[in-house]
Image (cartoon, rainbow, N blue to C red):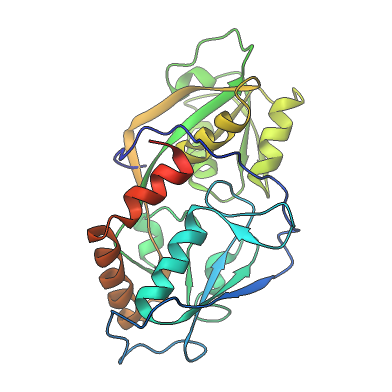
Length: 274
């Protein structure tokens, strides 16, 4: 739920092939330059390696290329750039979203996976400064004849969301409080949500606006973003363990340097369009 930084119109075809999220796949990416951030007080799970947990299968943030093994996406590029600033290699650990935060400090040093910064999450993990902004959006099929001008207009509809995401939490709150009467289908993968929508199994998908724009750009004849809630902006950040303040500080330093160099502006333009 965040301030809008850009007009989202993805110019790059999203690649939707993905591996089973339960399997953990790792790939190391060499650092391209010496560290420009002080890492003297930072303890990593493996010396010289930043181990990053993510759910690879959430385009355009993280997905697999056509070879089925090479990670690509906005978060992938960000993690690689972060590794360069920290002077370390980056090891991606693919894991299911459900339970991903329990692995921080156990299976990986941090999570970079389109993670919304929330007060509830701040109680159990530290966050970096935000690195991208987002909204919640409603996507329907191109031929949808109804009108959706707010989440209240989802009353009586069937909705698909990804399990344990802010979209899931938001829709569950609307239903549990009686604001709307809707059937919610919560899926492990966001790709399943759009498959359900395409097959006519649900009326709408509630999802991050950034992800919605990626799917719309790839499928302009199938889907349309009918509503975007700009009243409740979100911000995405890097999640680290509560006791790892040194890593949090180092990541914040790196984000500041990347911002000054124009990295985020160019990465947004590449993955979401200008």
